[in-house]
Image 1: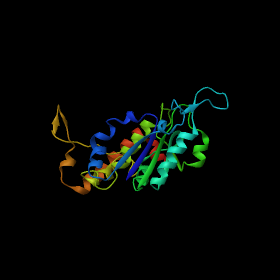
Image 2: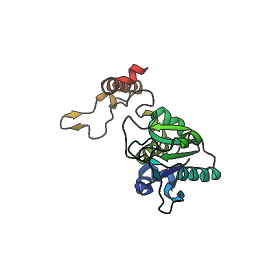
Image 3: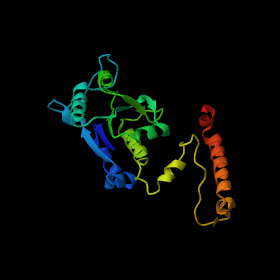
Image 4: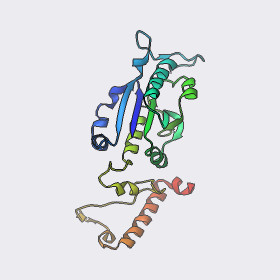
Amino acid sequence: MHIDILTLFPDMYNGIFAHSILKRSQEKQLFSVSLHNIRDYSTDKHHKVDDYPYSGEPGMVMKIEPIAACIEKLKQEREYDEVIFLTPEGEVFNQGMANFLSMKNNLLLLCGHYKGIDERIRELFITKEISIGDYVLSGGELAAAVICDALVRLIPGVLNDEISALSDSFQYGLLSAPVYTRPYNFRGHTVPDILLSGNEKLITEWKLQKAIERTQKNRPDLIEED
């Protein structure tokens, strides 16, 4: 998988792609990412990328020309499965969407900023709009990083134990069951004996019941949706 990220602040990603799973996925050549500074595509001598909205409302809007120039250049180099705009108005990102996008080869992520982007960019180039939650960030950079992390860990070969991702929260519409490790006894709090029983059937049933209980407590909306 390759992801191109269009941003006004590429330095925000210093370190994010150099650690943990994102780093290992690149070392295994299973994932690659390129950062593109939208300011580099501005023809203004000061590399200006924003202007006042025509409506007269407060705030600034990202100009169409630099974004269009960057997208058009990149589309000459590769074919994209999706050109995604990170915006609070987008479809809310979830595990199902992560599963779907993780099977794509090339994605382009556009990070919004200021009041937003000129609407014509959406009309001409964007194929999908994504939000990571019902709140507003100062820009799309953090959202793009979240999406990259969620997708990359699902690529076959990235995790040391690929089956591990199948038991993550939301994969089957429930939150994950509790997990334990050594020591068996910590200050009088012990590991449930069933997990040490070796009976896979009973352990599976226990995990499902605990997952349902946790979901009912913390995210009842997930069960209500079903």
